[in-house]
Structure formats: C-alpha cells, structure tokens
Image (cartoon, rainbow, N blue to C red; front, side):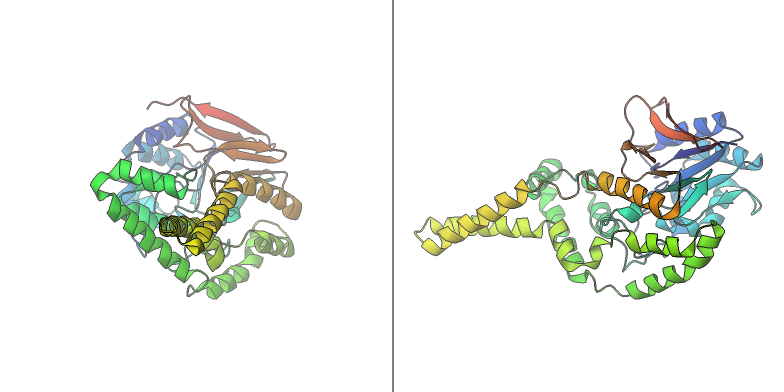
Length: 381
C-alpha cells in the first residue's frame, strides 16, 4: 500500500470548494492507498481565541459533502486516513469524534490523528511549522492555549480575521509603508479602523511576549510525553529530545524578536524621521541630525532585507529536514507549511494543495520502498 501525501488544504466554509472537490476525486483515484494530510487541512485559526476546535470543525466541514462521501467510502473499505496537525489546525488531534460524525462513521474507522510526525517506510512526515519561529509551538508534543499560541496564529486570530484583512494573510513581502498604502487602496474609508486594529494587536503582542502564562507548563508536558512518543515510533528518546530542543524557539517568547518581527523598529524610525524632518525645516539642527540618523537606520535596516519573513520558512524547513535526518536517522523528510514545492537531498516539500500553481494541485506518492514521487492533479476550478 502506497501513501498519498498532501498538505495545506486549508478547508474553510467558503473559498476552498475547488480544492475540496479535487481532493474527493484524488481519494477516489487512490482507493486502497493511505491518505495522509500533512497539516493545515482546516482553517481553524480564524475563529476567536478559546473556540472549541471540534465545534469549529463541524461548522467548517458542513458544506463539503462531496469530500465527505469520498472519505467515507475510503474508510468504510478499511483504508487508512491520517491527519496531522499544522499551525492553522493545531487542535485537530482532539477532533476525531467531530470528524467521524461528519463522515457518519463509527469509532472503528481507520482514522488516526497523530501529533507532531509519523514515519512511513523510513520517511519522516510532518507539517513543518515547528521549524518556523513565527508559527512554532512551545514544544512539538504540547499544544498551545489562547495565551501561548504563536505569533503568526495570534495575528491571524486577533487581527486578520476580525478586521476582514485576510488579503494580508500571506503578504510577507510588503514593507510597513507598502502595507499601509495597500490598506487604503483595499479598504478605503475603513482603512483607518484596520490600521488602528493592527497597531492595537501588535502592541499587545509585544507587551505579552515571553510573559504568557502556561509556557513552562507546556514545556513540562511536552518533555513528559517524549519517551512514550519515542517508543511508539521506535526511536531513541535521547535523539528525539535533542530534536525537540534543537527546533527554533518561538519568536513570541522573546520581546525584542517580536518587536522587530512586527517592524516596530522601522515604523519608529520612519515616524521619527518624518517628525524630525518637519522640525528641521524650522531651522533646528538637532532635529536635522535626528532625521538623518533615523533615515540612516531605516536605510540600513531595509538594506539587510526588505522582508524579515519572505524566504525564511523555506530556508528553515530545509535546515529542519537536515536536522531530522541527522538526529533520527530518517532516510527522507516530507514537510509542508511553506506553500512552495521544494526539494533538497533527503527533503521534499509538498507545496500547497489549495493555493497551488495554475496547472494543477501538487501531492506526493510515497511507495512502500520509501521512494517519493511528485505528482500534480489537474484543477477543476
């Protein structure tokens, strides 16, 4: 039995019906194979903090009847379906009952929802967000709470979703000024409200950074689960512990990193440069010097990289895959998360099944011999 692997389906009540329909076709085409969804299958991060993942999932899945029928037939035939959690659906491991209700199946169905990763034919498979500081959990084997969720999810839940600014969900390439101007182009008279909400959210996140209640408890819980998890996957507990310690620390655990990731240093320099520049027009030498210094800092900062995120996840996941192979002996590593197909020695990224290239939806077929074949499904929409 081969394993069909795809990631970043991002199912939502609206806007992803094409991906849902295409996945239903793919499941039918691969009757007899394991279907493995490697994280971010569901957009649960748009609901308010503290929402029950099972209830959110039930509402989200209701419109996707064609996919439900395909998965139901797959499971009823005794073929496995495996769902890994990602950063946007980190709570999916607790939703098995809700998924079975959607599929109208009993507890005997071969549906599994593992945490962190799985191994198939010597290949390590996980979503990959643990290697991205903007979206990493406190510990790979511990979930997060409304207080400890990573920076990227907190921004989605507290700013993007409630303000209706989802156009910025993947706008990592924009500078603060470009983002400000784009906000006015997109939202017109509502733009000041969107901007105000962003700053209120960003300031709150900076003030919270590293002080969130529950961080120590999550570290302790994750460490306590390591040994049994290692036994389950026939891995050395010490190697797995080293891997858990080696993944990047979440950015939201550090106030300075959060401040800089949200570009407050550049925003502050821009405001100071503008204010001091206006004052310098009145003949103030100190103001002129301050304006020059602020402009110099801003220019230097931008010269080091316009975006502090664009391209970083791809690099970090490649490094993470190499780390997994080094510490656990995996022959190959399959990750998702970045929405970009990528390959390096011993590493393959699935790309995003939902936000895919125009020519088709990418997925992988993993053979029993550990060989990974990249494939593309033609899009219906």
